[in-house]
Length: 349
Image: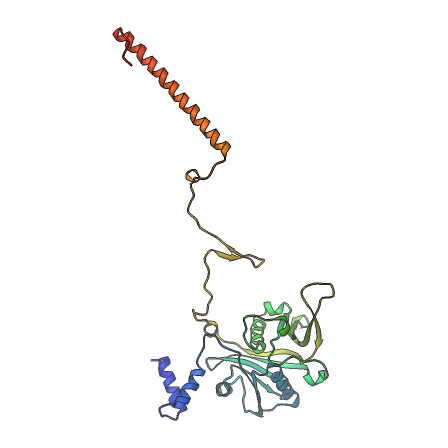
């Protein structure tokens, strides 16, 4: 029988406390690691593999600069092979210890040069991983003297190419990249807070008529909003290459099973927006509502009538009364004549 969540939490607390009753400090720490209805920014753990070249170390340093302050860089080499079970256990241990949901492992060897493995965890377990082979790289130092983004600012992410919507692997990679660079979740943004754009372009390649894995070009631009020279109200963005720039291709992938992915995407009922009845939104973003009213009987509605209508109604009633009286008079005369013929004298009226 599987342990209940309370039993698992108690066992974990005792394990951290060395088999004793957990202290208040440990209890408070475990409470901070529990799942929350509204989560903040995810922390990234950047670490080196068995062998890591200077170029790949620069990649990790630039990733820390881009994701700062939500990134932590480990400088020592780690005996980790990410696609092995032992390596995944080591990654799960390090991400749990550093309270990080995202990780990136850089390595370099003869078989897989300039290798970068990006992944994320769910419930302290590996959710999915993507191995990227870096073909070309320009670091932040190569763009010296040019303006850079502000600390903690959110980027605009643009994905160019049909492969992002047609290829399943690229769809999941797109979701992973958005998770990596999205920063703090916010409800709204001001235009002055946007200062850089990250563009990912998927270029399809083929060799001898056979399609290969697309090469992805990552470009980063510093964005400055200026007044529209044509007189428009919306500001015009001016882009300046600021780095880092990278060309890479996908080597290996390990994505979550459909059941685990569905569990990871599940949201609590209290967070989901309730559907409003009889309310829709059209293509222009306008809210349209529908009202259900009781059927109205117009004939019973009493409203103020104009003077001309009141006079016409009065004349009509007088005419109807005169017609009724004349009809009654004719009927009375006819009955009197019939009575006189039958009895020889006229009836008393």
